[in-house]
Amino acid sequence: MSGRGEHVLGLRDGRYFAIVLFCHGDKDRDWLASVWRDGEGPWHIDYRFRYYATCDKGDAFSGKDEKSEYSATARPGMTETEVCTSVRLMGEMLVRTGFNDKIDVVETKSDDPAKVFELLQGRPWFHVKPVSEAGV
Image (spheres, rainbow, N blue to C red):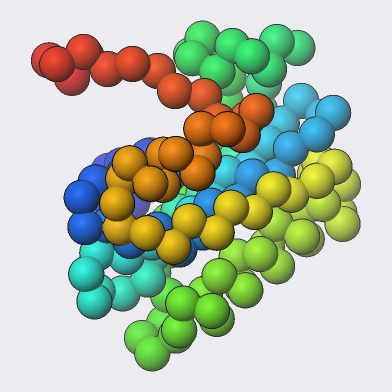
C-alpha cells in the first residue's frame, strides 16, 4: 500500500491522474506507477514492484506474489510535466538496467475515474477484481 493507505491506482471522483506507467515483459516481475493529485494539492507519485510467485502472470489476485508499494510527494512548485518526466525516467531506467523489457505509458490526464478506467482497461496488463458492495 502507498503511504496514504491506498493502492497505486486509487481512483476516485476529483482525483486527477496525469499518467500511469507499467514496466513489464518476459521476466517474473513488473512495476506499476502513477502520478496524481487531488484538486490543486501537491503531485503524488505512487509505485509498486511485483515479483511473481509462480510463472502464471495471469493470476494477479492469488495473494502469493510479493509486492512492495511506495509513495512520494513532489517538491512544491513542480509542474505536471516535470513530475511525469521524472517518473518516465524511472521506468526507462528499469528497462535499461534489465528489470524488465518494456515500459507502457498511458497519459490519462483526467479526474474522471470512468475515463481513467476506460483508458487502462484495454491494456493486457490491467487486471480488475470486482469488489462487493460491502467492500470485501
